[in-house]
Length: 275
Image 1 (cartoon, rainbow, N blue to C red):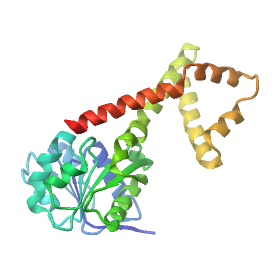
Image 2 (image 1 turned 180 degrees about the horizontal axis):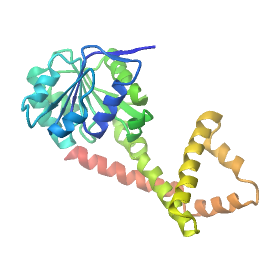
Image 3 (image 1 turned 90 degrees about the horizontal axis):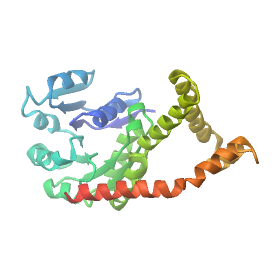
């Protein structure tokens, strides 16, 4: 089955924009009219050159953003949050009336973007596993977005993983779970790896044990159809070693710790939105 999308411009093809570009270049994805991407430097632009992709560098083509968005069916904004308003003001004269604008910038509201351009707007919050096609993207529709616009956005982000359509009021909360979540997982992996090293294993042995355990546990969860609690209890024999370890972890109030961590992240997201 082929996924078909209209011509796409990615303005600011950094890590996330580059991840989405990778999804668009995957087998089974057809972008009619091609893909145009922009970056600040020639070095970065050259890295993104591929069949079907026109890659511009702002340092050599100052009006690259305007050239990229002309005739595009979708414009994906991958620039930093502080640059969204200026970028929209820059490209507004070159946008078609039917062009869908999608932003992946944290903290920039739909109303802010709709005030800058007359187009339909979607706000998206993907996460870094999009780099390997396993992303989770929250997608919120603006006041001018139709069902067709939402479906177009869903189709785009499904090239790099799964999509949750949610109201914008939940986007910041989602960012504290799936957006920041990979960092929480990497922190747990790092800490357990350090524990293994302190127990006498080499860093290489520790990495094999811990990385393999996390990857295998996630695959088991996906394949089993069971809840995380059911799988945990399956591993935790009564009065056994795992039960003793889990008791220590639960004594640290992990639930409360994650509540406090996500609350701190949410407060910061609201600070960014108000800036």
